[in-house]
Amino acid sequence: MSAWQPTVVSIEGRFVSASNATLLGTTADGESVVYKPVAGEQPLWDFAPSTLARREVLTYEVSEALALGLVPETAMGDGVYGPGSVQRYVEVDEGFDPFQMVRRGDDRLWPMAVLDVVCNNADRKLGHILRRRDGTLMAIDHGLTFHPEDKLRTVLWVFAERPLPDRLVRVLEEFLANGADELAHRVLTSLGATEAHAFRARVAALVRDLRHPPPPVDRPAVPWPAY
Image (cartoon, rainbow, N blue to C red; front, top):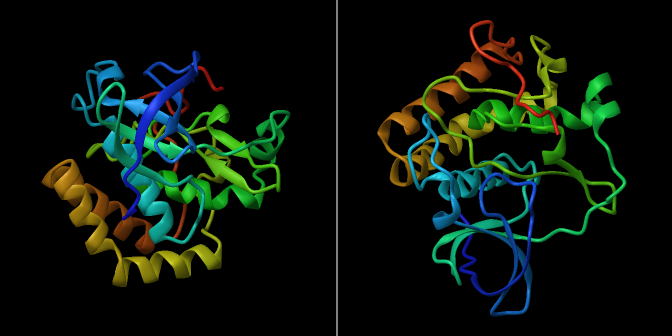
């Protein structure tokens, strides 16, 4: 859990392609951040209202607990439009397009695929896969996570039914033994008991099967648009 408690004091711009209010802001400490106020969330039929910001924070916490380092530091904060998720702004390679990496199933995407399974990400688009200027991959936009029903929608189905890499198996086994209960409690206090139980069950199932799950046949498997 992050000890960061940011306060957004000014807004510099808006990411206009986002369906929910996603703002470039500046904190009281002068840091650039991505600010998603709860007040700017669009209602969804299948996700509880006013919970997307908490789901963003939980995904960061799982990424850190698994030592994946995929999600920029994210915390609940306050700001000019009220409470919301606040994520440290990361300078990225604007020319990066993950399409070819995704198409060939680049091994560097495996940690992201595992994170999405664990968090039940319903919105892994190509545009949510970024590359920092130092070449490190980053994952953003995690409001549609932690649903108690199977909602995995992703552009990373290239890994479907493949065995997990050994390094990630070890990480998951350690997490299940020593970290999953604490994170499940965080999900419980943030979202509820049903979501917490489903989260714990997903981790256990992944450790048991040691394979990426297959795509669904009863619902769309890939988010639209793909970017």
